[in-house]
Length: 502
Image (cartoon, rainbow, N blue to C red; front, top):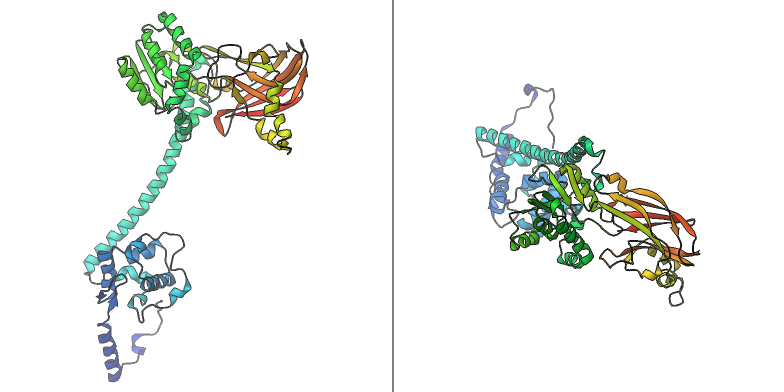
């Protein structure tokens, strides 16, 4: 529909004859007796306005709002009306219609379902106005004003939601920046940075902490006597270190180290863990009547606040496969730089990563050479998938064919996060003439632990002789896609292979 203005004046309009006036009057009278069938029931209304109001009041369907929601033009509006009349579309289905492909999109619904349908004789621009025709001018203005305010409020709400999302993202970035500033001001310990673990959002790190929510992993660790008794004996034999001190247990799990510390004389122990196991730890602490000494806090150490400014001692069982797997040491170092007093101590205080050579032709045959002929079929391409994955298992001590060499010593009181990624040259002194098939870390000739050994399989055995020096280089760094995983590259005897420990 359109409106036109011209230059012709009222004096130029020809007057109506008596017969014309009678015909016009008859048309007006006829229009007053218009009836409009409801879209959604059998009721008939006296006007388009009443029909629109009836649909909204009795069926909960606001036709003008639907037009606006689906951004319908005149043709889209006509299709919708005809579709509803043709298919007897229910009010519930109409309200649930999404903004995707509309069921009335087909041109077949341009054909009127009802002859001379009054609802088709109004365009979409006038639709929102017809509902107010029975209102007084003052009420009409008031309704228009309210609609305008509602529209403005909806726009403001949408903009506020978008601004809130941006603000939350900015807040996360500022939080990381603030952490960096706090760490950088601690000049007494030298430069340090929070690292990739601290930068992970809680939802990104959920899988890691969920894995520690089940009892089985804690049962395995508690039954590891080498691990658990070493911590207990250290604390019980050094009670003078713990007596009267404030101790922070990072990643407390069931709270076993916290309880050792309390029994060793600590004045206060703060135990922190993000996994769900901390709720069992709370019950365990109460069952052992240590709740007055031990305070448990659920959360990531990088995100929570402690009830004290500084602690005297930090204890943690952070070691993973190949020592650094899972990157929990990053969190311990964050706690050290943020909460440890000037003369505070971190335990364990010193750790080594060692490397040795293994000659185990049977293992190489089972894991690598196996793919050369599988039921008479060649599957050598599978080696590319097998070799890059280190194997965590117990090795037979008699298969070791070199003296172990320390490739990295970590001083937990001074090391920085960046120093946990490194490249080191090494040289292995061969003690038996055979074939070197494997490289591994963590000594196999000691009591078995749940850490076992991390084994790096070589694609092809390297022939070695007693007394020979086998030089190489190892590079360790975090996987940028998963900072709790490690990428380890071994370059030995001219052969280079990268392994993914994840």
